[in-house]
Length: 409
Image (cartoon, rainbow, N blue to C red):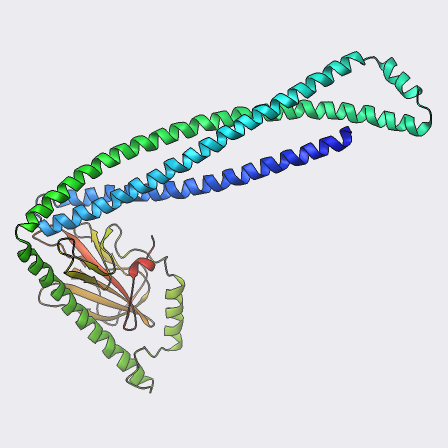
């Protein structure tokens, strides 16, 4: 009986511990992922506030302030959302932990009761003489052998039962310790979210105030947004013209059709393009520090949804005088230097291009070979607002790509 019972009990206990362990590991991994996201949003907010403090002397425009508060609200809402997920995840962990503690206490009670019964039984039959008489009273040798094995199994089971009680007691102590730590962590998250929500309320009030100011002269700001967009579109059309001419030239040199919309690549350029693609999602940022203020794509203006803002890349706000870096090795295809001072650099990586706009200084020239993270220029700072914004885009031939998918998160 003992021989059959203990292996079954051991197997059952192992399965319980395995399932609980696997669940705990999954929960722990999820919690680490959430914590990493929470820290990233906090970093973005701290970085944003530090960058904004650099331009306090300049009188920012209402539209610039509106962009800033919209960005901050978005990040703050993400921070609150992730913190809520963390708190909910911890609540589930705490509940599961409490259930496991209850189950463990029940199992421990049964183990102790069984062990106490064995001790009493062992005490009553503790003499060696009774054990010998038990063996000698056997009707044959086979029965005596089985009785001897029973005595050994009973002693081993008693020893294992004692060890199991010690093990389960230690586990119970550890679970109680973890439970307290989880409760403390949850309380910190709740407090953190309380502060974040208070900050968000203030930011929403500021946003409401700015929108009220804008609505008083909506036509003026609508015109201003459209004028800025026309300027952006004009530069992008010039960039597309340069790329189209480069594609035509590469195909003409290779003896192919000049109407092709893709570059004709040499073996070396094919390798370069392949390496560029292999690093998708791992490319370094074009600046050492900054945040994406305007994402890729077309979206409605925050002041008038009938007016669309189009971005063929991402606009990164950074420090004044921030150095611009090439995100991958390549060859400088062209340099644009318009009269308004919004200089741009086009770097070719096989059939891919990275484009860096709104530069005040340029350190390289057309035809130069550049390496990854090589400094190629300096971001231009807007004198009126004090903002330093780099426009960064990635093209595959004439096809625009979302840079956020290419650079490191």
